[in-house]
Every structure is written in structure tokens, then in C-alpha cells.
Amino acid sequence: MRPVDVSAKRSIKEDAPRSPGRRRLLIAGPALAAGVAAFGAGAPAAAQSWRLADWCPTWGCAPAGPPTSANTLSFSDQTVRLIAHASIGGSRVRVRLSNEMGTTALNVGAAYVGVRSSGSAVRTGSNQPLTFGGSSSVTIPPGAPVLSDPVYLSVAPFADLAVSLYLPGSVQAATLHGTALQVNYVSTAGNFAANASLTVSRTIASWPFLTEVLVDGGARCIVAVGDSITDGVGSTSHLNRRWPDLLARRLQTELGESGNIGIVNRGIAGNQLTREEPTAMIGGRSVLSRFDRDVLATPGVRAVMVLIGINDICNTSGASLVKPATLIAGYRQLIARAHDRGVAIIGSTLTPFEGFVYYNAGREAVRRAVNDWIRSSDEFDMLLDWEAVLRDPDTAGRLRADYNSRDWIHPNDAGYAAMAAEVPLQELVALLG
Image (cartoon, rainbow, N blue to C red; front, side):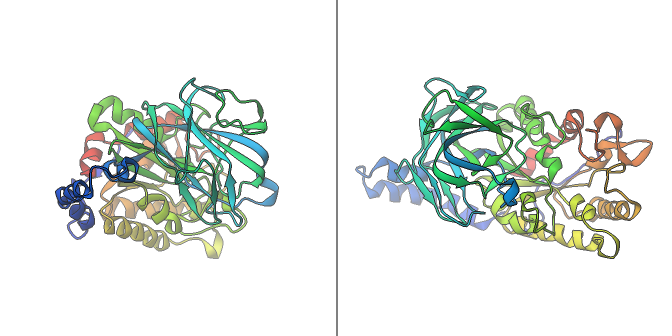
């Protein structure tokens, strides 16, 4: 296998310094602490505790939708138990729920978070009630997310967490992440959110309403944003073998404490850089549209890894075939917006797809032109040449057969492992600052 062509810089370009707002906050730390002390020892701890904790996602996904009516999940007085695989550990947890694609209010009658033991079961004694502004239930307006209050829960790196939501009445999942590659559970009728065991009426392969689980401890965070290859399509379900999962394991296994970095996967199967499919919003808003929400608004984010653009190519053809200049302009917009917030941005070459149903010579020419720019422009803060990692040495436009998950565009477990293995960890950590 040809070695990966990686170009790393130790810091963001001089014309895009790290956020002055972040520096001001650090400088103001002692004054802030003095102000809190002056506020009085009798101040309620809950009212001040948010100032004392730095939250970082241990898991996240990107909300999409609404799905077509024929593909909309419905719940009726049921409890959903959603499984989230942690990347880092902590002693306290918060959960973010979303009704951002909904057009009506979402009522959550009860919510709990615990450590999954196996299947739909929660480890005895770990299931903790979530509150929202002190209330055990919450109504989420259409178009809005909601963040829970902190709860004490010991979370180990790579633990499976179970978030249980009781949905009274009739509910449709207008907001969800469609490709979980994880079995999630729907109960029979009733509120079983507090129960360690669940009477399961059916399973689902998506994450409705759940978008983030955060832990305390002040860890740094890397967000992976992209399409189905970042979402993990082609990997074995339930085993967490997407490339971001494998990268998280490498960081902690090989670097120890310095690799304690939250990895958040904001890939969406079918997603595009510049375009959206009005009839297939399960593929999400374009990365240009969702970048601020899904990347820059992520707590603790220091870097974003970008692998996006192949769907823009595959979903256009003939006279409307996307031009390399259009994709390049999109990448430059992501770079500018990341640097404006003091976030490093790591670019990746578009991976081979010869043999895929939408492959043709015109689309391949666009892919190669885009990759030429990604390699030569020196505009990203680091380059991951994942085309070189995955391509067949004898047929440059095709995946290696042993990395192909059968459709000639999505890697299999071995392909995703090869992608994660080629990330230079020391350079990546140095880039975070």
C-alpha cells in the first residue's frame, strides 16, 4: 500500500489566529473567580456549577429530516431507548435532544441516561433521571433543541450509554439521524424510562431526537463531518467500526492521557457539500448549511475533519455536472468559517468509486480535479490523502478489493481501519493546541 501523503502544520495560518474570545476568557479567569467568590458563599451550588465545568461531547450525531411520510417513524405512548457509544469518559453527563426539523412541539414525558449492560438492558443502579431546567419533562418547540441539566454518572471511555425517552401521546420522528448502524429499542405502551429492563415491541436502526451526549472534564474535541463514509456505511453494524470510532480508540490506546479527545461523528449518509435533495432530507442539509450548527457550535471543538463532495458529483450529470470550482469554493468557505472561530480544519481527498452504480468518466474527472486541488492548494491545516490509502494500486479510480464493502464506494471494516491507521496522531494533537 502506498504511504499516505500527509501535510501537517503546527498551527492555524497566521492570517487566521485562534479565537481572541477564547484568550480573553482565559485572561479573565482570576477576575471571574474573584467575582464568583464575592457573590457569596451562600449562593446555590447549582446556580454556579455551570461556570466550573468544561463540557465536551463523548458522542454525537447530526440531526436530519424530515423524512418522507412513508418513512416516518411513529410512536404512541412508548419509550425509546437509544444507544450511544462513548469516546471519552467523565463523571457527569448532559444530553442534547432536538426537534429542529419538526413543525409541531415535541413532548418528552421523562428522560433517563444510564450505562447499557447488554441489549436493551441498563446496568443496575446506573440509570439516572434527566431534568430540563429542573423539570422531569420538557416540551421542545418546533425548530429547537434542548439541553438537559447535569447528572452524576460515571462513564468509562468506550462505554455504551442508554438514553431513554418516554413519548406520551402520538409522536412522529421528524428529526432523526437515519443511519445509526446500531440497534435501538422501542417499548410496548407505557413509561419505562426508569426501568433497567425494557419490554421491546420493535427495534429501529436510527437515532430519533438524540443528537449529543456530553461529559465533564474539559477534554478537547474533534468533529468529523461528511457523508456516508464518515457515517460508517459498509462497516459492521453494532460494532462501532466507523473510522471516527477507530480513531478515538487509537488516540487513547497509543497516546494515553494526551489522547483523551472527544470524537464526534457528524457524518450523514447521502450528505453533500453544496447541494440538498428536497425529496430526500434524510440526507441532511448541505455541509455549507449545517457547518455552524453541527461543527462550530460543538462544545470544546478544536479541529474538524472534512470528507465531503462525492455525493455532489454523483448526484449531478451532463450539463448540470458539478464543477470542480464549485466544490473548491465550498471548501474555502469551510476553511474561512473554521478559522474565524479558531478551529483547525483537516481536509481529505475524495476516495475512489469506479464500479459504483453512479460512476462515469465525467464524474471521475471532477473527482480527480478536486483531489488535485486538495493536494496542491496548501489551504487546509492538514491533509489526509485517503484516496491513496484506499485505491487499488493497479486501477487508480477503484477501491482495493480487500477494502470494498461490495458497492465499490463504501469501505468495509478493513478499509475504515486503514483510514484511521493513517492519521498521524502526534501531528493531529499538536494541531489542537
